[in-house]
Length: 312
Image (cartoon, rainbow, N blue to C red):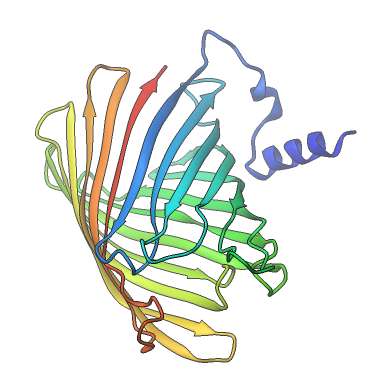
């Protein structure tokens, strides 16, 4: 049997998916299509790279009343170097594919998701006039152990984020890299009434697989206020407070890093099937390397994103 077919059914089995449920019935099919953009603008033009990204995603559900879903995503990100930089324009294309399922056991809702994110780099950190080779590609085999536990009408617990095994091809002169990374968050939510709720969470990020010659670790306490003035509009202002973070070089040198963020997420239902989504935030970012003129230090930036989603 073709290896891709074997892998497909192995993936389904991992999520406890009954393969007979994979037969599509057009009358019961559902899902959504989302088209959007992302923008990052640094306050200091020479601090780092800005980027512009266009993205599209598709979710297909064989039965819209069930939890099984297939997710596909594609994004094209273009980096804009500062005026003083001599680097060529750099961009990357990112493709994703995931399978998700949902299970209910009393008050516990478990929604495991597993899949692949593939990144294709173009001219990433190639220096003009040199033979230095840029990045080739990266793969992340991700697993999302998502759950929500409803304690009562007021209180619930939740988790989000992923763990991943990563492969990075040709990171500058260092050879291929393989390793582990995660981006996880767990917290509690208190619902005051239909319009108001508050959630507090602890988040932890770590990555030993990147194009730089160091590992990155960081943690935050995250506060979100959920406000729905009408059934069509939802506003979620948030503040993320960095409690700990460091970069560890291969020679063992450690540098403190800090990330604080303030912003708001907005969801607005134009119709029953069409929704507008927007996000804006400002991040206070400090990479305290202590090396003047090395492009580190203050990297405060604005981030914007917007999308339109059609559900069917």
